[in-house]
Image (cartoon, rainbow, N blue to C red; front, top):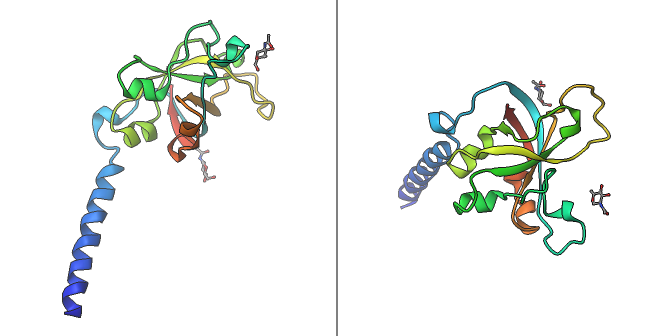
Length: 155
Ligand SMILES: *[C@@H]1O[C@H](CO)[C@@H](O)[C@H](O)[C@H]1NC(C)=O
Ligand SMILES: *[C@@H]1O[C@H](CO)[C@@H](O)[C@H](O)[C@H]1NC(C)=O
């Protein structure tokens, strides 16, 4: 009886091992990214505040609506707005790809740098790719670990 239980638990852990591995499979070509790679990029999340008096809380650097990750996943947006240091020389609308996000959501998440942040701790005269802030729908969505982590960024 005990032996049986042991075999059963081995089978269960083997199955969960296989499914865990397939979840983090980044070898699926449609989930990979191309372009210039930046490692150890800090990803964080923010959300639009629609009832704010300050338009910059819900509009991007060119007064366009912020497109959230959840709107994209619901097929209500064509891309996802991210906020970066545009003043450092990153052009508005720059397209970006993060394989860790693609792997998590099992689809290609098209990111566009359209909102403006600035990091005082970053001293650089060249485009600053060290931080990406992704726009999500609600405050609760900002707490998700998958949008608060170190990632690889392709530009
Ligand atoms: C990224 O960070 C890890 C851990 O701090 C470090 O070992 C690695 O060298 C870094 N990679 C690059 C390309 O900076
Ligand atoms: C709106 O918020 C931005 C970013 O926090 C700030 O720089 C700007 O001064 C604010 N505008 C007004 C009118 O308060």
